[in-house]
Structures are given as C-alpha cells and as structure tokens.
Length: 239
Image 1 (tube, rainbow, N blue to C red):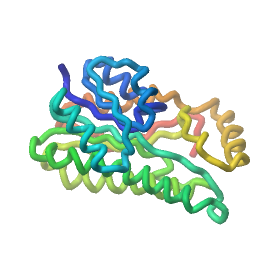
Image 2: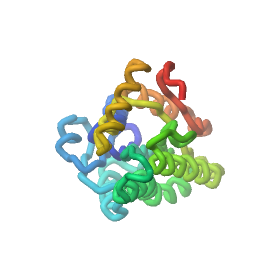
Image 3: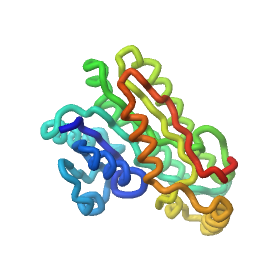
C-alpha cells in the first residue's frame, strides 16, 4: 500500500477530485469535510471519511490519529477547504469577512500544525495548499477573499523556507476560475450574475480534475524536488 494522503474540503469540487485521483493511484485517503454523505458516496477503497470542522484543531487531530493508526503516517496533506464570498467592501456583512478569514486561513493551519513536526522529524512529507490567482493580484468585489489567499501564499512560502532543510515540501496551487460550487455561497445576486456572464467570455472555468492533475504531478516528483507553486487558468482568462 502506498502512503497516506489527507484531503480537506473533500466533499465537493477540487477536494473531491483529488481524493478520487489519489485513491485511484493506490493511496489510502483520509477525506475531511462537513458533509459525510458526500464523501462516503464515493466509496473509495482504503479510505476514511470524517465529518469535521477543519478549523477545529482537536477534531482534525482525532481524525488524523485514527487514519494513521489504520494506514501509517501522513505523507501528504492537501488543504482544499475554503469559501469565496464576494461583495462590495462598503456593503458586505462583517460575518462574511470573518467566515472567510476563519476557514481560508485557519483551515490550512490546523492540519499543518498536526503533521508538520512529525514530517520534519522524519525528513519527509508534503503539504499542498490550494490558494488562488486571487492570492497574487486583486479583483473587484474580492477584497477580503484576496486577503485570505494572499495569506495562504505567504504562510506556505515562509514555512517552506523554514522546513526546507528537513526535506519537507510546501506547495501552493493557484487556480484561476474553476467550475466548483464556490460562487454559489455569495449572497449578492447581482455580483453572481455578473461573474457568471464574465465566465462566458472565457468559455467556462477549469474542470476540478485539471487541478487534481496538477497536484498529482507536483506530488509525484522525487522528494528532493519541490515545485513551489503552480498557477493554472483557462488560456482565455486574461487576469
């Protein structure tokens, strides 16, 4: 059996496709998200599905502990859980800002806090964080979302530098528009409508499987090769 992969946000979108791809490649997989039934319906072999709040350190710790008892040490943690709530900064509800900061930033920190020390001690392991092109540049109606993704970039790169001598890889994946349920959580209907109209100009977003393939490529490099960041978008997406 290959080494254990942990995927957060595994009930839909990119996380779901990552879990399927790594399972198909023979890895045991720990799937973490709130919606247990969506993960269990995949019926992946050598998998464990746990309904957790990924911002809750102890819930994530217990899930990882159970998976490691069954499948061995975590070799790769892939942090996919996140939310995108678009809004005009002068009008958007503070709770939406708070929710994005909590999930998009703390959601990558819980699992990292749990597995990183052991990876450093073992001189092996990989942590892959899903950020966004919005972690590299700003966009209208994206102010706080961009802020959270800039944070993902900074945290990932800074930790990468500090653990590099222990042979541990930290990788940032920065997609453009992807066909996931992410936009559906935005509450401003005009912003959603305009966004969907703009997507027509680039002939829709990327399929989540394309992002999973990028992650597969980066992970399957030899451990002494760290692809620090992959930026991927539809060719017609100019920004």
